[in-house]
Amino acid sequence: MSLEPFGARLRRTMDERGPLCVGIDPHASLLSGWGLNDDVAGLERFSRTVVEALADRVAVLKPQSAFFERFGSRGIAVLEKSVEQARAAGALVVMDAKRGDIGSTMAAYAETFLRKGAPLFSDALTVSPYLGYGSLKPAVELARDSGAGLFVLALTSNPEGGEVQHAVRADGRNVGATMLAHLAAENAGEAPLGSFGAVVGATLGDLSSYDLDINGPLLAPGIGAQGATAADLAGVFGAAVRNVVPNVSRGVLRHGPDVVALRDSAERFAEEIRAAVAAA
Image (cartoon, rainbow, N blue to C red):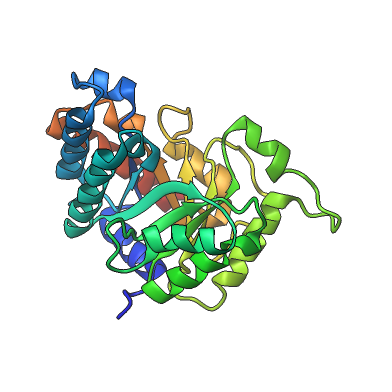
């Protein structure tokens, strides 16, 4: 039996816990900053501490798969355990793997992260549509069947993204807007929120020329270390701000390994975001 759709679970969890997503990004500099070795033992300690500190209180945890994959099978084992423990504590897990391929390969990626019972089953997966939105069909179909969701790269905050996402198609619409339109179609008629979201950078400034009302969540990296603040959200996302899932990684993680400090930092960000959304 499939889960309740991801969009419905996300809406409820954000309403209960506040709309904050915290990354689990155990890159070498953060491990060092926590006094940990850049090895599997350090990785395990880092990830376990973040989950212990935050999984019972934030809406979403977002492990960056690459930082686990670099340690091979033992790193993947740590990732599996982290996903399991985070979900057991009530956090929704968005696997940040940015997978994108075609045909049977895309289907295999979908099976890895979106099939109920898979060791790395996550509530949602980040995906890249730049082999054509239609290439994501296996992931879209499996996500629907399993009650999971997707976050599709649409308007990312990295400066290199513009050469693809701002490219103008023959119909006059740019590529980023095209991805948003596809997602709005996927989410049509869903309530209280569709399960197919977009990744839209919180650092991008005025996006009023884009229709962000896709009836789905907007995963928004850039709060904290990248320079965006909770106060910027309304100006960037406009009427769609209630569906924004702001992501903070280094801004919270730099306070580790102290569990209380991690929790305090996450709560400060969550309160600032709640206040900004309420005032919009």
